[in-house]
Image (cartoon, rainbow, N blue to C red; front, side, top):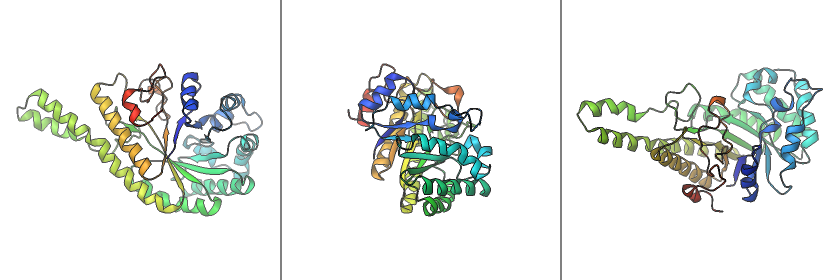
Length: 322
């Protein structure tokens, strides 16, 4: 298992990543950034150039992704038109970066999109044989997602000999009944189910609170069982795996929230170590917190292992020994 982390513009977070030999994830490779107007004749290279210029040559780098789920309309274009955008990126940076996620969260899409994704990978693998190609997908803890993922993954392996799969999923302990996709959606909030019954039996408020907290601490363990099942299923496909995640606690987490955060990371890191899955920490430092699917909460959840001063938090030492 190897640690990777999103490489933000914040210099303190960059230093943490580089000083500790953590692999670098560069999301500025996305066409959303490189072609903001979707004009193939007007690429904007500056941001990606500047980001890569600060990374030593011996640092592991993974550009993730080029095409994301938000670009479903784009991926439906003619394959040659898609390549007019993708190929210049690979031609410019392919000698600098070996590992690339071409498409993220698009495999479990309608058949027409899925076929376009596979065709793109097949062409890139043929025309850029030195690159190590990965694909990303959301929904690690959902059995339906994992079961539906195996056939297109096998097709990708046959067509392009992809190296790996990045699972994108977050353990959000701050949101209940959220409309956003989170690790808690579909998971019964046991504490809420029992809360009314406990109060109706005249138990003290402290007893009720203690019980609720004890039940909530079981959630990461329950999620861990789902994750392990998925790892086992996918370990038979002969591809590498990486888990992109963060445990989201909400702003101003209580001591109990932090306890759940620690347990969540413990469950996920242990599973990644056991199954040789790379652990991608999307928000490794509190100075640069970003949630890809919820821009309104950027900077409020503080789920990092390093604090805003760039110091490793005492409870995080068990996960990352300096």
